[in-house]
Length: 462
Image (cartoon, rainbow, N blue to C red; front, side, top):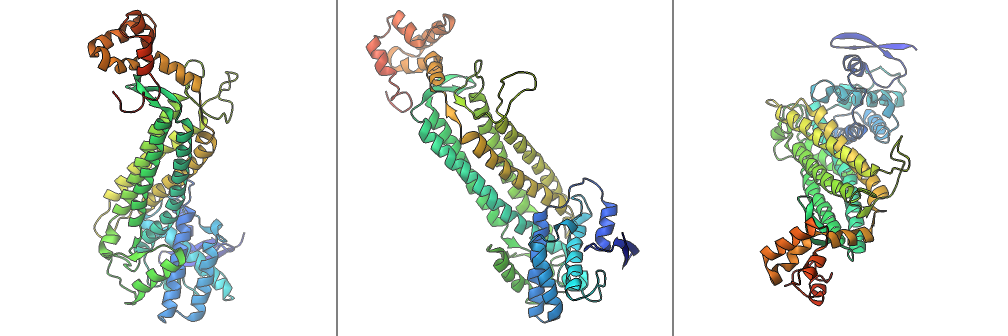
């Protein structure tokens, strides 16, 4: 492969002649062969969108030659569309603030623009990555703005997944409402509950999670583009900031607004910490629900087995016929990862110093990963787990009949102490509450049938 020679402040370096990135990206490839994970493509595309908006504004302000601006605009449009994704190659773990990722974009767009204008890649006298593509910009305002744009789009997908799960659980709640079963507190017998009431509570949780996430998403609409290096806006036209935000509104279709304090916007990662915290909350709540589903579906012969989950694959390499709650287990693993990602975000955010937080790349990586994997996991869980979930009505009825929690309904008729004695005898003699009351002649069969009428077991009455 032939190479071209490029030069920067540190000297010269060979770059593959057919590649669209340049010397800064080449140095990053050599300096940071860390994880094998590239910076999220959504973040790259968001940076490209900013480049498109900036070149249009700079051309309008007559700071950028029209031909150069047209070429940069075309190149940026192509990169947003994904045509040059293979040239976005910087590792997640890189130089502080994300300068290598930012320069990767600047170089790819510059070299594509040079090509559009009839030049050869690397001839930066035609279009320069810094002087032209990066005109009026800094990594310190571009990178956090791109983080916001990328996450706004990704959060939309997560909101859709949460809404889909909520609607499916609401449907199951109605389907399961006639099924009365034993409630459980402390994992011990408690008073009855309808399976539909139990599942309906899960749907309510998913509704609340959407409200929390929408609040976090709204905070992402305030962007610090135009702050440049430290918040002063140095090297920008006085109108640049308002115009570039307006252009980004058109390109992204989000109601982006200029940050009220550019210095704070450059220093603080609080909005991303808030988003990550909401994702952590979602993960914790989803695991709670998910583990209830796993527990209620345990069995099929030696567990609770009040829920039946769809079988998606054989569950064991040694035990024939075994089926496991695979989709639920997958979702829990994803949620554990989201909680872990939040720890990385929190630590990186508090490590910001003075005018800049240089740990933006790891904050971006973990926030984007959390939203992406939680979205994909929930979509798969909804489709392959809860959508096909059914109730084992016979098992629910059998467990209810055996429940010692039914003794609670005797309190108004025979008192707490005598009802407790009934529960003890029923447990010791392996009998039902109904049987013991009749044997002890505490109440008549007609009275018991009225007391234990299933229509009265799950609502206030006396």
